[in-house]
Length: 345
View 1: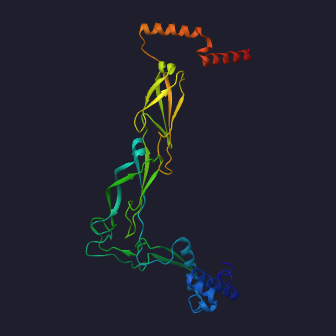
View 2: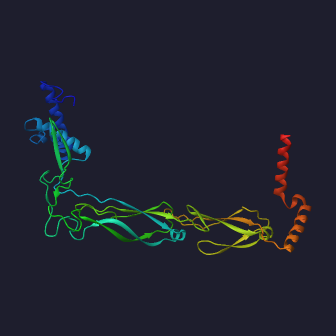
C-alpha cells in the first residue's frame, strides 16, 4: 500500500516497487513457484504470470482479488460448489440404571434428507442443473472499482455455480426434504449427565451433493428415587429404627447390583455415613469403579400406644438418671450453651 500507484502518482519508482511486491506475492503463494525460486532464483519463475507481461490495472485487481479471496475464503472455485449439511442436537433422557448399565435406545429425529425423487439434485427427473451464466459456474462474481476488485457470492446461483431451470416438484428445487428419521443409539455404560454421543453423518443432508452433518446426542439423566450420583460415586439415605441405632443390627441396603446387608454398630448416631466400596458406577472414560455412600437417618417412632408411651417415659427417666454417660453429645452441647451465656452476662 505504501508504493501503490494511487498514492504515488507520476512516481515510476513506486510503481516498480509495487510490481516487485506483486511478483514476490505471486511466487510465495504458489508452492511450485516458490520451490522453483528456492532452487533456481529468478530464472526458475521467469516467464510465468509473475515474471512476464505488462503491468496494468488488471494486474492490480488480480493481486488484490487473490489476496482478499485467500483471506476471506473467496478464491477461485470450481464449477460446482457443494455445501456440508448442518449439525443437529438431540437431548436423550435416561434413567440412572440405563446410564450405568448402557443400552441401545431408539430415537426419532426431525431433519433434512436428500430428496428421493431427484436424488438431491433439485432438478426434475430427466433434467439437470445448468451452469450459471451470471458467474460462469464459479459461484462468485467480481465487482471492480478502479484498481480493486471485490469477490462476492453470485446473487443468481447463491454460490452453487449452477441453476435449476426445471425444479423437482417434490422438493421444489431445494434437493432436500423434511423427514423424521428413526435411529438406534448405542449408549455406552457409565455415561454421565451432559455427556455427548456423536453420530457421524446423521445430521442434515448437504446441499448440491455435499456431505451430511453430524448428530450430537446429549445425555440428560433423570432424578432417581433412591440414589444421587456424583461422577463415579452414588449416595443414598437409609432410615433405621431407634432400637437398631441404639442396639445395633443388620439393615438391608439397596444397590444397583441388588440388595446387600449393612451392619450397623450399636450407638450409631443419625447422619453417620457408611462407605461401600465398589458399589458405585464404572465411568465411561477411565473405567474407574466408584463407591456407594449410605447416610443413616434415625427415624423417630410415631403413633405410639399408651403402653409404648409409658415404656418410653420410663426409659427416658432411666437414661436421665445415668447422667452424661448415655447422652454425651447432648450434655456437651448444654455445657457449651451455658458457657456461652456466662460470657454474655
